[in-house]
Amino acid sequence: MRIFILTICTLFAMSTAAQAQITGGIKAGVGSANVAVRDVINNPSDYAKKESVTSYHAGAFARISLLGLFIQPEAVFTQTGGRLESGPDATLANQVAEIEFNRLDVPVMAGVSIANLVRVQAGPVASMLLSAKQDGENIKSFMEKSDWGYQAGVGIDIQKLSIDLRYERINKTYENSTDQSKYDLANQQLLLSLGLKLF
Image (cartoon, rainbow, N blue to C red; front, side, top):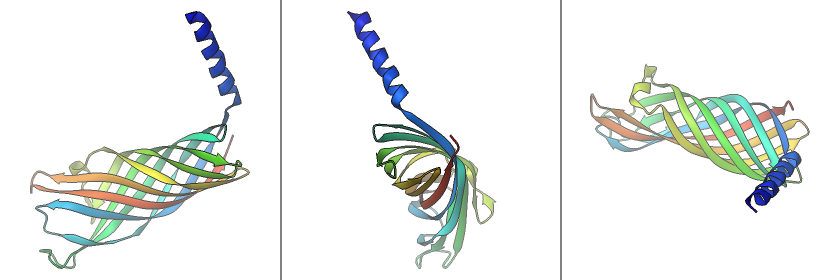
């Protein structure tokens, strides 16, 4: 009986895999990124105002579609960051800090495809920090090398072209044991991507 059930499950899995559509390609785009600071401990700059900067990303994607549902893992190099201006109560008034991140992001999107044209999607993002700078100084050693975040958005497919608009948020923590300073960074982006399906 177990062999019979196992055989049925195997045949069902093979049939499902045969019906699944697999596509993949490359993608690139721009975004509007900012960094929000909170829970500041022992830092001379009480950052209050945040400004957006232009971010860039490029990478590759694969998409497995079945019965109107899909899973889309990606590997994307991202250059992002933001500008922060200290608040009126800060020790260093009117100081502007520029923060830059280079990351390797691995989003895994899941969603629904409507009429093979419009996609609604969301999913987690594993993010590996490649470099981090504040006003040109390396701060990577004060931050975790990897973090998790999420993306959510919509997409449109036109033949071999794939267009996506997504919101992304990845939280990071800065901790400097030398001056005992610590704060949380929320790197947020609104991403616009253009993809080209190669298969």
